[in-house]
Amino acid sequence: MRLHFIRILPGDKVMLEISPYDLSKGRIIYRQK
Image 1 (cartoon, rainbow, N blue to C red):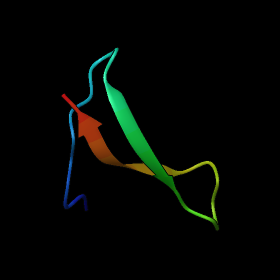
Image 2: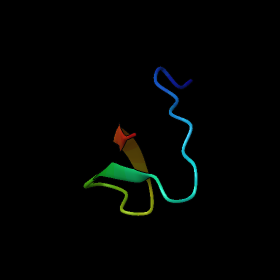
Image 3: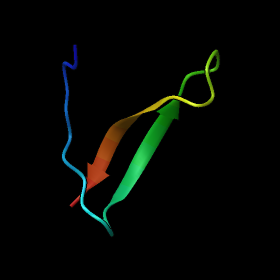
């Protein structure tokens, strides 16, 4: 269940927060417009 779903487009600059337990999964915490 996603609380915050951010639509990203090719070329967008985003910040990723990667889980220290599972490096293959990450979540986008910020998107620059």
